[in-house]
Image (cartoon, rainbow, N blue to C red; front, side, top):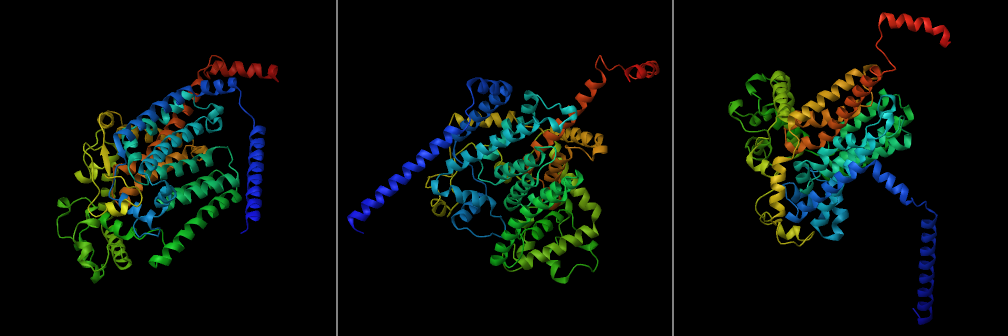
Length: 521
C-alpha cells in the first residue's frame, strides 16, 4: 500500500468516525430529557424501593469484598470448563456456560459475581414494577410502593439469596430469565404476540439454563389459553420458545447421539426411587439386566437419593460413564417400574421432601458437605486438585475463594439472622392459593401464573431428583407475588364493602333502594 493511499484511507476513516459521532450526538439530542422535577417526582413515588435497593446493593458489595471473588460449588468447575471449551454436555446444559463465555474476555470471576448480584437486583426491580401495574388488581387498585417493595424483599435481603448469587451457579441467571418472561406476559391486560414471543424466547433460554424451565413454558402457554389471549399470541410464544430449544437439542444430538436437552433424567429419577424401591415388589416386570440396580439395604437405612448418582455402587456396576445412554435408559426403566409397583411409597417420599420446604429452621440436608456450600465459608478455599491450571485460563487468581475480614464475618452473621423461614413461604403459598380459588370465576385470575410457577419450582425437584435448599429460592418471589395479589384483592374487596357510602345490604336498605330506583331512573 502506497503512502498516498494510506493517508487517503486514514482521512476517510476519520471522516466517517466524525460523521458517526455527529449523528450519534444528534440522536441523543433529540431524545426527551426528563426535567429535575420529573426525576424528583419519580424518586418520590418509588422512594421505598430506592432505599431498599441502596441497602441491598451495599450488602452485595460487602459480600464481594469479603469473599474474593466467588464461592465455588462442585458444578462450578464443569461450568467454567464448558465456557472455555464450548460443547453440549450430558449433565449440564449450556445456558450458564454461555453467560460465562460472554464474560470470558474480561478474565475475571469478580466481574461474573458482580453481574450475578446485579441480576438479583434487576429481578427485584422487574417484579416490583409488575406489582405497580393497576390492571392486575380489582378495581385497578395497584399495590402501593411500600407493599410492592415488601413483596420483593426476599430477593433483596435474604442472606441465602445473596450467598446463592455469589456462587458460580446458574440459579441467579435462571431466575432473571424467568422473571423477565413472567413480567412480559402479565405487563398488559392482553399481551401482544410480539410481547409473548419475547417471553417465549426468554423461557427457552431458561430451559437451556435449567431444564425445569420447560414446565414453566408449558404453564405460560396454558395460562394464555385460559385467559383467551388469542391463538396468534399462543402460537407466537410457542414457536419462539420451541425453535431455540430444538436447535439446542439438535446440537446436543450431534455430539451425544440423542435428541434431548441433557442425558440425566433417567439416572436422576432412578436415584429418586432408590430411597424406597424394593425389588421384591416388582415381580417379573423388571428386566434381568436391571437387577444389579437393586439395593438390599432396608429403605429406612439408605442415604439421600443423590448418593445413588455420585457415590453408591449400583450405577457403577455397569461399564462406561454414569450418564451413558445405555445406563440412562436402564435407570429410567427401573424408576418407572418402581413407581408403578410402589406408587404410595413414591408419593409419600415426594411429600416428605416437599414438606422440608416449610420448616421454620434450616437443618442440615441432604448431607453436611452439600449443605456447607450454601453458607458463607469461614476460611479461604483452594481450587480442587488438578483444576487450577484449567481455571487459570479464565481467571488467574491464586485461590478459589479468599476470605477477607471483617466483611466476611458480617455476612456470615447476617445470613444466620436474615432469611425467609420455610413456614412463612408456606403461608404465602396458602394465601396465593386462596386468591386463586376466590377468583375461580375468572379461572384463577392473574394470580394463577405466579402460583403455578411457585408450585412447579417447589414440587418438580423432589418429584424427580431430591429436595435441595438452592431449588427453593427461585420459587420464593413468585409465591410472594401470588400472596401479594391475593391480599390486595381481599383488602380492596373489604374496603369496597365497608365504605360509608356503601352500607350493608339489609332488607330495609333493599326496600329503600327499590323505592329510590324510579327517581334515579
